[in-house]
Length: 544
Picture 1 (cartoon, rainbow, N blue to C red):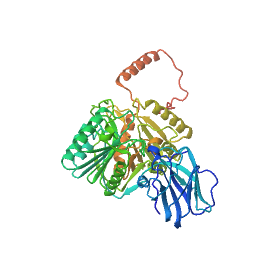
Picture 2 (cartoon, rainbow, N blue to C red):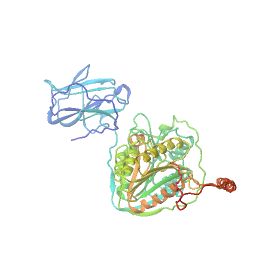
Picture 3 (cartoon, one colour):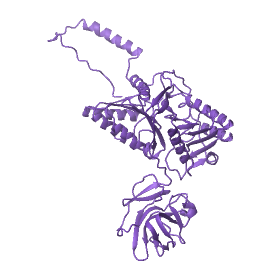
Picture 4 (spheres, rainbow, N blue to C red):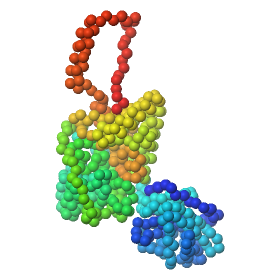
């Protein structure tokens, strides 16, 4: 049976009205509000029993009735006045209607009859633009047209190379420079001159170079990024940006590259502050398993091949933006890249499977969960609720968040809320805000270590929007080596977040103690009734 490709769940629509007796015939899909002049490309998909003769059948809305073609069909078929437009919007076999049923965007009652009786009926209200209405168990949900539906894809044993930023700044660019055959670079923002030079040099060597980026990042695309993309296109590099009314995701937020037979997946953007190692604490991994490379290639092709991926030359004409701030700091290399063998690796994608896959791993934890994130969507966000469940069953949970100015207030509120919850439930859940010191400027990593055995590395921010509306790529690595590598970095970043006495404060404390000693010699205290009893030893620590 052929399947209709539909996507992204939206709420608010239900199948209404009395339904006819089950006859094996259903209206399973409707597309009443295309992103096109005069709603060109409307269609409806029927599911019928094998060898159903449609002679004499009709399709009606609230204003008009049209006859179906005189054909014998099986399974799922699409009906439309614009079959050429519809064939690239559905996998169902498309048949042309001789007359047009104009499905109202505000709502319609659609009825299918065989000439003697009603065989199926569908009602809807307020059809959102560019969304397909899909019926499942009597409920109509609106999903973005053309959504990918990749499952979690897994590879067996293989080697991976682990690294962190800012320590390994430049490693992704070195990988780009090594390309012999192909480079598929996917990102959110791109403002790295070194990466630009590496891609242009690869193109001149005959490498097939393609770039896919977000067209509408938060805050807008900068003028410096636009100039670099102009340079790439001038050098015959294919550059496309995800944007416009056909967009299947809110943001293309993934950060990865396929270079020949290897792939690199990052938490960082392609810019000096990220992959250049000039600012952020980030994580990354190079994969060598053919299954992982193939999975990322198919993801790139699906995202770059849809109608929302616009050529840069076409997108550029209406663009204006300001220059971004430059990151110029340097940091000591504490953690060198390391190569390990893993038992298996998996690719998790948002919006289709990452949220469930991450939560399943958190729910399976038995000993510890260590999380590093810029921020989280709040104390009751779905991932955070999974942390609470883990802590309730005795799993030691640590959550390290950013102290950057744009996240500090919200993160402190989350830390306070979770500290209160942990105290109330006597649960081993701790939250700290990172203190970068001389190690990095700010937290930008998005990583998880579960039971010291499995690591999650990728672009997924811990909020519902990222998990459900964006394109995100996460790699799950099952192996002690990678887990211990990232856990070492996490533990030292966690330890650095503890409040410490500065030299100036130490001088002030010593002065106070000196004065207290002088005063103490002049005051007589009553002796303790139990001179052997130890003093209370309370550790003073902040919940952050």
